Length: 260
Image 1 (cartoon, rainbow, N blue to C red):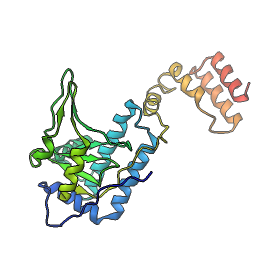
Image 2 (cartoon, helix red, strand yellow; image 1 turned 90 degrees about the vertical axis):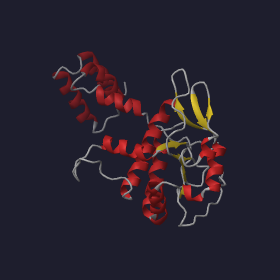
Image 3 (spheres, helix red, strand yellow; image 1 turned 30 degrees about the vertical axis):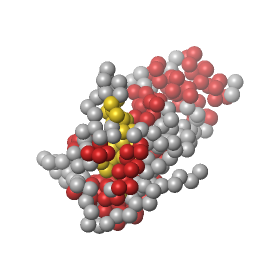
Image 4 (cartoon, rainbow, N blue to C red; image 1 turned 45 degrees about the vertical axis):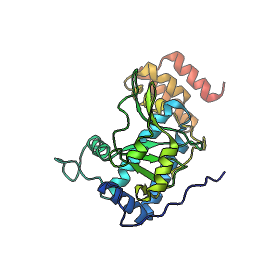
């Protein structure tokens, strides 16, 4: 299926109203190598972790936010936070600096849907108050909307019981009417290829054999041998000698290796 996207033409003298976004937009338009890296990285993101799982959407969305920040850094739009040396600054401080420029809202589904701007506990949250970049495979690029500068688009935000949403059509129409607010980029569509479980991977970094030998046995048993069978048996024996696994667990793991 080929998605048809509106063609956007851009006049260099036009401004989005944000100097930072203008530099970001022009940098991506000029630097096809960086643009290609960003597109490929976003594609890898959705190909590794499937965002159709609701829990994974936060992982995929968070990665997209970091990737956009990395591109802005490469273009010099995002700079070292004040008080830091050239080497060894805190990336979390950089994230705060990126969020000071704009929020990032991304979709990866082939079917267009409303963008969720804010969530609330028993309410709709803060609403649409921050400059925001919108990404979707159905948009002509990265679309910038600042509620203070683009009131027509912001006015289409809808407050619901638990969230504030901006209809996809509001972003699409804004992109067509304001090409100066569009940075060239082909956002990836989710092909449901992702199989990685980031929560499992994180849990395994906690339940390590060195610190939690009994909890780690489940993860150890599930891992396929990475060396020859004899070397794997020797490793298990050593774990048994050091008290990391019991005799019964050793016996079960050896039988698993032998296919019994």
